[in-house]
View: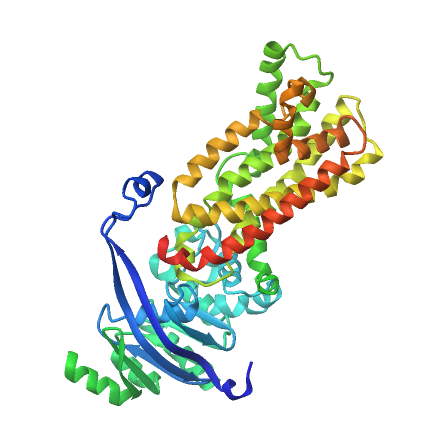
Length: 247
Length: 255
């Protein structure tokens, strides 16, 4: 890690992202051979020349209408997909909550799934051992933790998934529109936890449409409009401007 | 890459155990199925083939088991491994983790299955009165060569299968054919002399022969041809990792 970059958590530099749009995607060999060079490929440019620097300890919200490219940007930061051109660098352990409970195995118990899910985030067995009680307490599942996950209600499922993800202790946390977890009580608890993480100098990037909560939580907001950064600045200011145009 | 995989070792571990335990979860015999299956297969061949081939191989069942169990490792890994990226598409699209974990855990769970099923081989060796010999010390080498070979194949096929879904079916058919092109049901001497080079082109021939030499004939394996297969497998693995690395960037978009 270079010294002058050490206070940056995420650096996005001249990033373009194009998606191939197939009208009929040739998936099989037959289709590939028959439609050789005949398939119409259109490119859809989702992100255009994005330049963002996020400092360590910042809590940043990405806002914008549906289809503006917020989630794509978040996926690029996670390294699930890669930019067409440009580069993205992240410094520090990164966890992303794009979808809760990805990788849960329905036949295994809640406790086993904690181990499995946390290991996807790159934790070792010892690290998970140390956190498992915190995770169970946070999820408020009590004795249900030792029953198979397929017997859970969707709320219980989400609570468990969120509890695992939030307790991973990453330095950078990327969250995609998942704050609407569980009942009011649990939502409040999630926000409290996020606030706590924010104070402990973690870097958080949130994609969300619940503007009121973002205003409270984030100190910076970036408004993405049709694949470009429209506005970047103090959360309340950007959100007010956004509401004026899109509200 | 190795460092990253080491950091995610717990994922590898839980993936392997999910692979071994999860597959048969809910069934009555559970994990035992992974041993009952090849045994039943052996039973069928042991009944049918002596009729057709008029095989005079002594201890034919033991002769079969020694080859069928590693072959079972080979086919299960290739069948499951080729589709392992497609099957895990859901997680791949949602979470970042080194994608190499998926093929590695398939090959490793196959290895563990085989190691356990070595107990069955031992049982057959004892019951048939063949017993053991000191040549068993070569077993880890043979297993290692097969492991590297499988890893190389799976890295390539699993990555390609994301882009061309036919790969799975073509490969499954190819493996099925290869079963007859590998000296499992017969010993290589039964193959016509002028065609035997064809048999020897198949790396699994050398590996299966080596298992037989160790357990059945109680001699040293043919180290020279084993070394050739080792070099071939290492080169395959090298290119496999390269291909996988290149193709993995598009996984989330293609799935």
